[in-house]
Length: 153
Image (tube, rainbow, N blue to C red):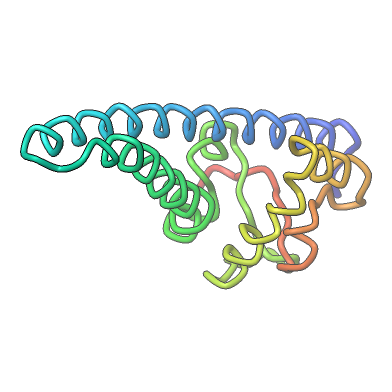
């Protein structure tokens, strides 16, 4: 049974996890914006309309951001023992309520419900993590998952 100190530690680590992953996604978005601009310039020189410059950089950011979030929140934990990159750094992992490995579907459900958990700059998810008995956000409750400390094996 987890102590109150363990639960507080997990809650704080989850908050930091989201901050770290948001920062990673911002870096990826900025890099993709620069790449989109760099791709637009030669296309304009080849005769494409300047409208390309207005669309391509932002389309690149949108695609990279979506793929980045899917990779961090769904694919990476599915392939790496239930941990996103930030969770690995902070010693956390996602498990089912019974302690097993979540399915790809569970990771997708968690990700889709981030739309609700992320409302008000993530305040909805943060409050749910703080007040629920298992420190779950809505995505965890619906997917039947919980975030726990990662044990070293």
